[in-house]
Image (cartoon, rainbow, N blue to C red; front, side, top):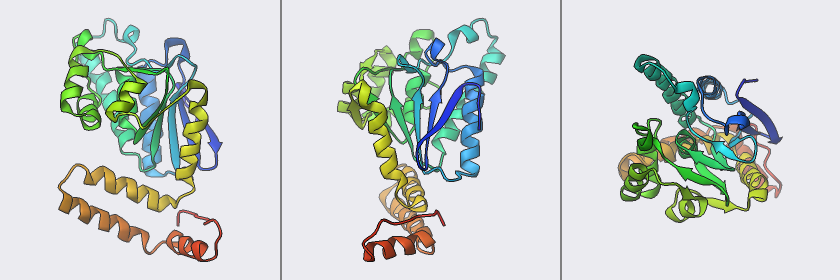
Length: 262
């Protein structure tokens, strides 16, 4: 797969790294990038192939994603703005629906839509130099790609209100203290550190990993009893698999499991 605004590579077996690739504009989100993200994640929803973990990051050293490309948006009619935003929405929803775990590796500034991209991933690792902000209210709009929903779920409603209503930037260390970021790395170590985590996910049974992600994502939005039922449903889907039989055999034979996703 090749895209105009995304760079794809496989830094380890079964790990796909996706880089926003507009470093000359701090990886700002334009219409073509939305099309590319939507196309990529729609394809992964239909068929993850042999990908067992994804890393989402930014090309260059300055930015993960600086948010919407305001130069492209300058002078847009209301109708054109709305039409473009529908495309943005669908791209974000496709990312959030990806069956394969997605780790955000935030290597620089993640403002506006960039912060929303990070929040749409399963979890975030960040460089110690990274900064986040949801600055939309300063432009007369609000976060419209999950920010008002994903940020409160990560840091709590009261803190999210302050961050969104003021548009104030915050550091990776702040984000880690509040529970939004799982781990902060020295900038030079981020790529390798995230890759090690992605590889640890990729060596697990791919069916089991996807079902565990599904159970968590759906269950957290409902009551405990319903969540437990979702968990059992997901668990039962792993029982008839060859991977389940291979995992047990490998344990008893004291060898690494060779999972195939079957």
